[in-house]
Length: 227
Ligand code: C5P
Image (cartoon, rainbow, N blue to C red; front, side):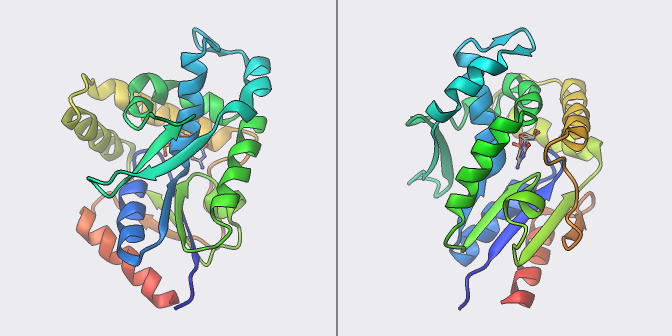
């Protein structure tokens, strides 16, 4: 069977990664969460004192960008990939509100994007990959055979993220999450380098009123149409 490249882009917290992970597992493809990579760079910047309040020391980050190694390893218990920053498992640390509130300005930096896109393209060289993010169909894999652009209302996305963080035992505030979702949408859509937008040849999926099984079925159908 031919192996293809699948690009899933869309707004924050719209359930992209759930559908991408499930599809990859079902069809035996590699799954890469590109957002986790930008989150790991953000965590690195926080932990290494590169933020003064909300201001990033971009010169220092630029000097260190090649020292930031991000990899994914499958957790043998869950079968799901965990994110490693310089060989340390940071899967939980990169999902906090602190990282969420600082990640969009980090991912708007052109040298950060260049470094991450190069790593992502290397990961997808052999095809057989499902990658989710903001610019996968437009910049990372413009030739992907299947491109999906996912959207949902900001309120429903904030509700989903609220439930997810609460389930992990984090103390969360719905309005703070909604604000963060809207703010990230704005920065992601308006940045100069690779702004979030639907590729012309991407299929649009608004999943505001879909359950996870329904969207999974829709995605499998799109994959089967191509294969
Ligand atoms: O997907 P997730 O919400 O975890 O991504 C975190 C942030 O990383 C996004 O808000 C966006 O700023 C950035 N990102 C990006 N390009 C990607 C994936 C994520 O700029 N391909």
